[in-house]
Length: 423
Image (cartoon, rainbow, N blue to C red):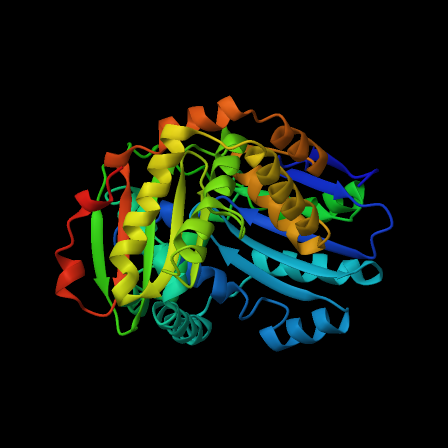
């Protein structure tokens, strides 16, 4: 990874430009990030950020979606976008010789979308199908449900897709008003991987510097949630379970220790939960622990899938694993294995241009970080056993555990006693 550097500049209009240099890279990637997402939506427009992200791809002042597709694919690249709780982003990746195509189309999508009635109505149909699809994919839907339960009553409970009934009623005037308010400096940032800084700044100035007059969203940090248990019925015979806790925001000094805690508990097939819940008892098909990060808070949660007869024992075994970890601490060599596992995942991910672009944009947008891969690996290496146990005792508090069960309607799980999974 020698020679990889991250540079930061600004356009004349004040837009941050962050570029990661990759020597000898044959691909280049550009992203425009907008500092608004589902947590910034108000009552009545839940899902608008996501619908707008779809709609701006439909048609601009200079081209329609088919022309975009022909040009980017003819340039050896691809276009995409995503909506999160705290940002919306649009990006293009091509081979180096056609970098100008990626810049031009991504800039056009953000700066010149038509957002008319026809485009909005077409994209509403697509978005509503996406929301329906997610509900029919329980292993994805459980993540949304857990966030909604954990952050209940706070803006973070608003998932990216939004409310289907509200999305159906949205008009292109709603989208245009939101675009005119949010898609403005100082909410815009530009990210590039494998690109030239000077060239990127010039492009950003020419494309985006005229989009002034906005203001940043005002956000409130979530309070510490109390423990809750919720059962959600669907038509699947296979049950999904999420059990987790609130953790730290993206700039917290202990965020690397939280990653190590997550890895020890449930990352990989050698983790405690995989071994105790799946390998020794065969209670689940899959089980893993992960951290979902926001700027001012995150979640540390375990997700598992199993048949109905195993749900209760799987939850209770998971709780016992957590309790044992808190009382007995780390085993010899356990932290070092976890470090290498996480470092390996980081290194492999950074061999992909699009993964680099995603991390560059999200990390900077959430907390202003311009951390290189080498710095990230050093931060992981610096975590001690005392650090892991300290954050474990702070985060893994029994009466703060939130649990969601998703599966076929069941009186047993509607009335399940959550004290059985206390630790």
